[in-house]
Length: 82
Length: 109
Image 1 (cartoon, chains in turn brown, green):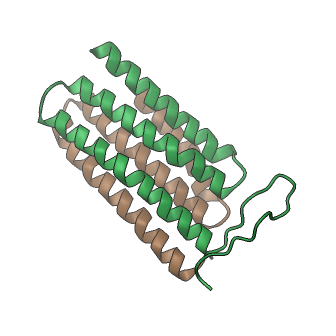
Image 2: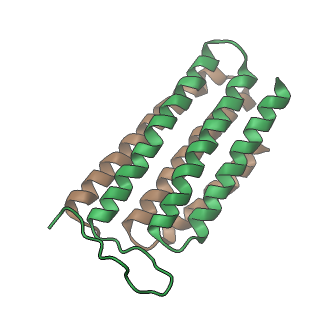
């Protein structure tokens, strides 16, 4: 149930990624979707009964989301907004 | 223990819902960051604490707590870096009457 609500919220955030004016709004939407996906992965692990495997995937996803946001922010800071 | 876990997960989902509403409805980039940067961090923290309570005492619970600490450190850092990048590349803030109150001048000439 909780996973279903979070999936609906992810699809609502996808509106900001697709239609958002400018680059930075899309980056915010992508970052929010990444954080929600991290929770959804742990919930899917609870649903399947194999939490200890899905925890590692979720940890990698958290690290990857952080690195993507930081690197895109530094890139657009040096280059200027499009 | 299960009641407390369900309560924490429901509060985390409520904060995710609030941050999504703020991301969709607020008028400006800076106010959207204001909504998502706090609601997302608190929602992830509460949800992961509830899931760790649901898991009991094990190595998996310790890993969930480690993910929670990691999110609590890195999510405000990412928000701050994105906001500074937008301010340096002259994204104009929104005002009520449509005029620019103060010129957004970054470090970059």
